Amino acid sequence: MKQIENKAPVIIGCDHGGYRLKGYIKEYLDSQGIPYTDIGCDSEEIVRYPLYAKEVAQRILSGEFTRGILICSTGIGMSIAANRYPGIRASAVSDYYTAMMTRQHNDSNVLCLGGKVLGEYAAINILEAWLDNPYIGGRHDISLGLIREIEEEIGQR
Image 1: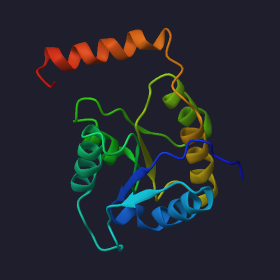
Image 2: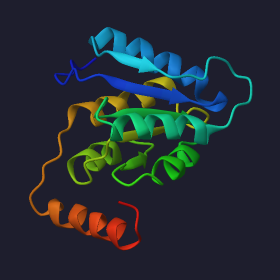
Image 3: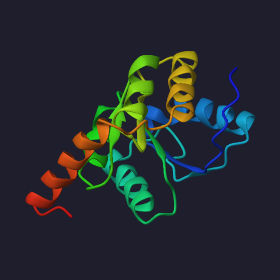
Image 4: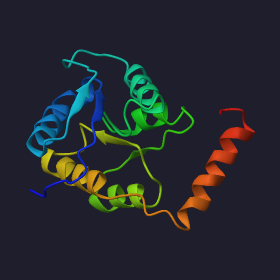
């Protein structure tokens, strides 16, 4: 297991489809000494993922957290809901390379995982890539600037 250097606190939420995987993620964060706040859910009873995406997004945008993890059955629903918030760059990923690239090139601040499509080892591998890779800036600043312009143009900022 790789030792993660960035120990910034993480906010984590899930729906019923991500509940089991969230347990493994929390164990991993504990083993790394990374503090987290778990906003739920707390069982496999059916809940609505947009509510958890909303809270994670709002608490990142408030400055309380700089990064968050959302887990549903596929990661897709959470990413769609979280990306409604200007300034949130939520990425649903299912492999190490895309987790690394979404941090390095897109400055992703929310990682979305699929509890029904990822095993625990794959999820931890993805999480390590996402936690351990910084945004590299440079030419990628241009694209993020264009995204901000789009948000302003459509009145979302």
